[in-house]
Length: 180
Image 1 (tube, rainbow, N blue to C red):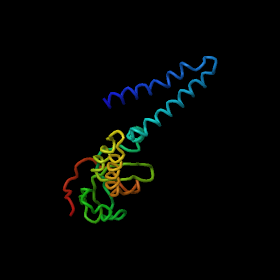
Image 2 (cartoon, rainbow, N blue to C red):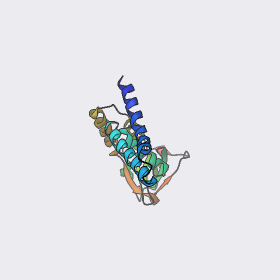
Image 3 (cartoon, rainbow, N blue to C red):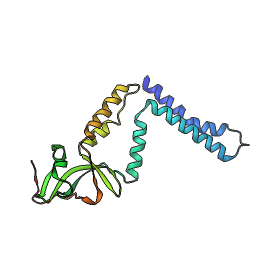
Image 4 (cartoon, rainbow, N blue to C red):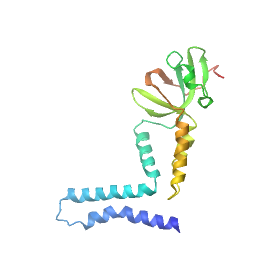
């Protein structure tokens, strides 16, 4: 019954901007009618977002994925030891492999944020925690808090590195052995 009520509530809220547009006196300029409907839409989105906290996360995810800032796929990244010592990626979560000992190594990672200047590399397991953060329980703030706390704990391993210091390489490397 709660789900049905929420579905009807959201349906009614989503048709409100259209009703506002239709009910505004046609004497008003078209721009005023459209802007009033737009403001109503934003207010409704704000109200819904306070209860369904995953909506801003989904919106942000869509924007950063479409714009190419993130791709949320696991890749191998080749890194020069002279620029980023292996100690940066010493934890087992990185699945580090030596390519040319002392010169190059690779890590399995996800690029959570990319610009021309730097890349935020995160362990591949962060994808699972990131997707978990999309889940929600209506009116359960503790669930949201715990889910986001787990994501923050996993994100503690993320490393920002220079975009020119790393090369993405998705083909299997010959003779690469896991480092210990």
